[in-house]
Every structure is written in structure tokens, then in C-alpha cells.
Image 1: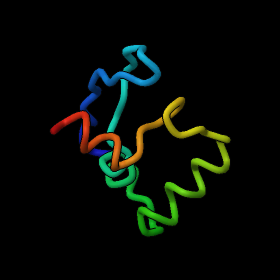
Image 2 (image 1 turned 90 degrees about the vertical axis):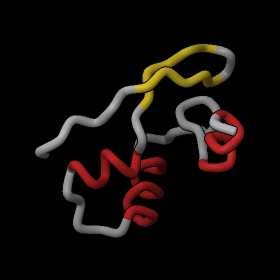
Image 3 (image 1 turned 30 degrees about the horizontal axis):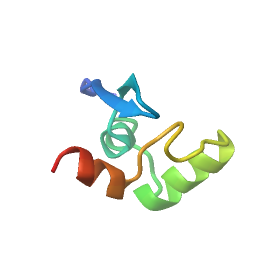
Image 4 (image 1 turned 45 degrees about the horizontal axis):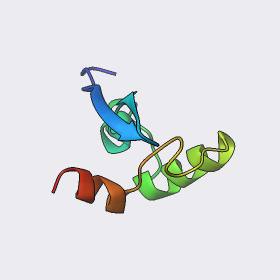
Length: 65
């Protein structure tokens, strides 16, 4: 892992949390699998819930619009 990943503040469920871009994390970790396969497996493995633990692309587009 050669580069630092920016940490940003995002609102999930009305609470400000520290967040990172999963694509940047995937790239920095030099994962061999394509991003979509890797992230789906990580979400399932950690039993993450959208809008509670992470924001999907649609929600992020609204945040940055």
C-alpha cells in the first residue's frame, strides 16, 4: 500500500462519520479481483447494511450534487 486514502466526513442516518472511498481502498490494497466482485464479498462478509454502514453510489451522487 503506497498511498494514503483520504478520509472524509459523511452523514449516514443523520450522524457524521469518517468515511473512505471503497474504490480508492481497493486500489491501494492492490486487490487482484475486480472492484464489484470484491466489494460485494466484503459487504456480505461484514454483514454491512446500506444507509447504516455505507452509502451506495446513488446516495453519494445526491450528497455531492
